[in-house]
Image 1 (cartoon, rainbow, N blue to C red):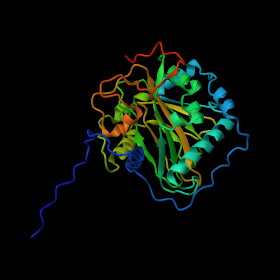
Image 2: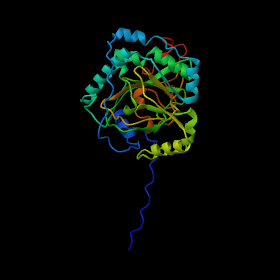
Image 3: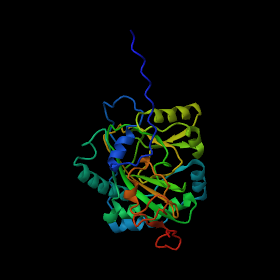
Image 4: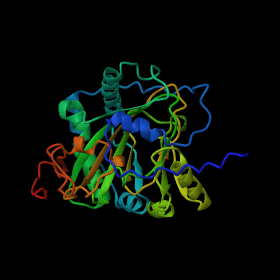
Length: 334
């Protein structure tokens, strides 16, 4: 007598519950959702870091307060495509200064050498700026915040939070996603400044952006699953069927990308022998509120906005107005 057929396992798409672990556990979970190819057996040598003198803290602070020459064409490109890569946002010295501090923090937190001491992991730290004056200059940078405000075409932006990300040698892909459901904000005026702390060749896994911005509509019906790789695979297959354009290009030293919360993006494996260290800061239009029902995909969001609840204006002391500088007149935090 044959056994009765077993019912197919239903995909688990219920993400309504809040996240109940820390941010590192969130990243460990999230990268597990990526569809990966075979394991890496040999690592490529990463290009050497530039041999330039390190600027003083004061010089970095002054540099990051100067405006960046953003053009009308830059803003139009971002509005159409949901991302832009801008060269020379940081000087090479400022990038190396940033890398040294991020590596120090990562090694202190995880007890292992960055650039070879850990493999196959995606390491993260967040909320480092309140207690670190040097990193505060990068995270609250008037230069970066003004770029974000201008790209979004809004008068003022607040910080959501910083994120130190280190994709270690051998670490797999970051799955296809957009950030709209990561941030529990009721606004689409949200942008992430993704600042590499070294050059990123193709073998290291730079961010890759699908465009134009409205390609998210093609995959709106693909159900997000909280286990397995079906969502990542479904998005990739849908984009391939529709010949969606993807920008996957290296990052030069000092180049920073800015992506909208509706832009779909991914990143390949790190096939090099160096950690892909990045400082990713997210900013949003002042006046946005918290959605009524944040989900587990928003992670530990209350850590980033203490004392703020669903439906409230998103404006805790840890979410300062970063642009305009020193001007609280436009802040709508009542």
